[in-house]
Amino acid sequence: MDVEWFLRCGRNLRALLVDQVFSHFRVSADAKTSEMIRSGQITDRHCEERENYRRKHVYSQWPGLTEEQARKKFERRQKLYRILYKAMKMRYVLRYLCSARERGKS
Image (cartoon, rainbow, N blue to C red; front, side):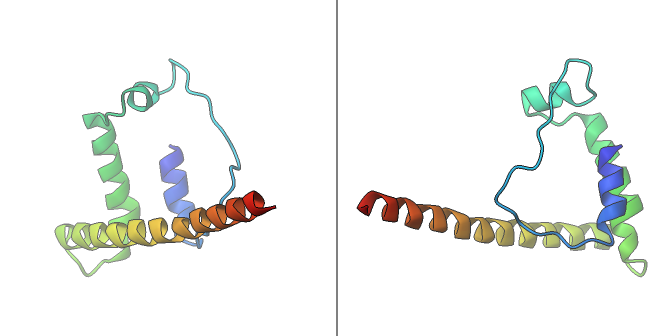
């Protein structure tokens, strides 16, 4: 539900890494994903839903590719974005360490 909304909206948006919390959410026993969040395990049902969303909203970006080719392209991009995300987060860590060092000097 939320995932599908984010996927549809994300087609026309550019993401920006921001070092700030904008919202929190509460996990209740009645929530669809509460057990998955508590256990850290993704259920088969969730894997199937994710793959369906990917077919509908992600793989369809590349109409000339087979589903397998699109999946591989998606996975390569996902790995690249994870590397870029971690590299960008390092800027914040380094900035924090430098400011902590400056505060320690005063």
